[in-house]
Length: 280
Image 1: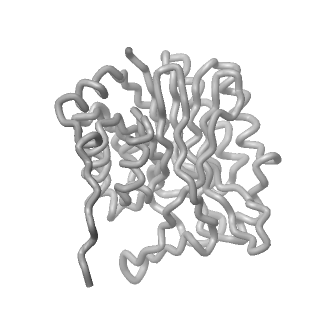
Image 2: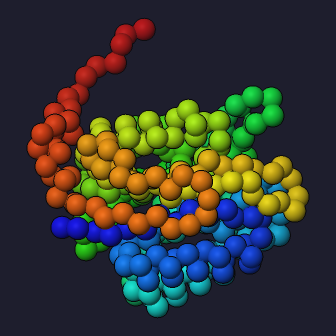
Image 3: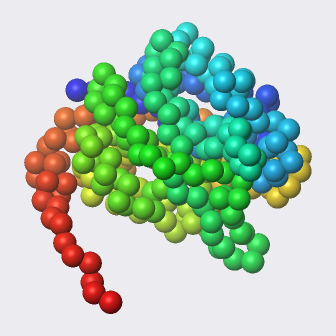
C-alpha cells in the first residue's frame, strides 16, 4: 500500500492571525499536488518566547481560530491533516498552556489529540536557555490513531530524545510516527537526523517530521531561530526526503509494506525481553 504525504515547512511569527493564511495556502498546495496526508510543524499557530504575547494571542481549543479554519480546510481538500501542534490555553489555574497535536480526518473532525509529554528544559549555553515546563503543562498519555493506511503514533519534537515512548508506540501497533518540531539550530545540526533515523530503525516505523525553519519574527521577547530540514525516513533508516532550508512543501510517497518487511528482517520489537535493573 502506498501513501503520498506532504511535509509543510513553516516560518511562523508570534501573530497567529498572520500565520494562518500562509499555512492554509501551503496545505492547499500540498493537496493540489496529490497529498493524502499533510503534516505541519510544532507550534503551527505561533512561535513566541513571550508569555505576555502568548496570553494575548492564544485561546482555548474550542475557541481557537487556527484549529477551526484548518479543520475546514481539511474537509474542503479531503486530506488527512496532522496539525503538528498548536499552542493553546489550558484553562488551568496556574495559567500554563498546552502544546497539542491534532489529527484531522477528511471530514474535518478531530480524529486524535496528543499533548507533548517531554518538556524542553535545557541550557544549551549562556544565551540559549529554555524552560518549556514553566509555560506549558506536559501531557501524560501516549496516543495512536487509526487511518485508512494503518496506525499513526503521535509525538512532538523533544519527545524524540526518549526512545521508550517510541518503543511503546511501536508495540501498540504504530507504523508511522509523527514528530513535528521547532528544533533549535545548534541541536539540529548535531542531532536532528541521527535521532530521527534511530527512532525509525529501532521501531521499524516510518518517521515524518515537519519542522519550523528560520528566524521567527517577534513583536516582543527573544527572537527564535529554528533548524528546518523537515524529513521523511523509512523503517530501514533511509532518508526519503529532506526539505533543507526555506518555507515550502515537500512531497514523498511511502511504501507501507516496508514496515512489515523490515520487522520480519529485524524483529526487535518482538525480541525485547524483560530484565532487572542494576543493584545499588
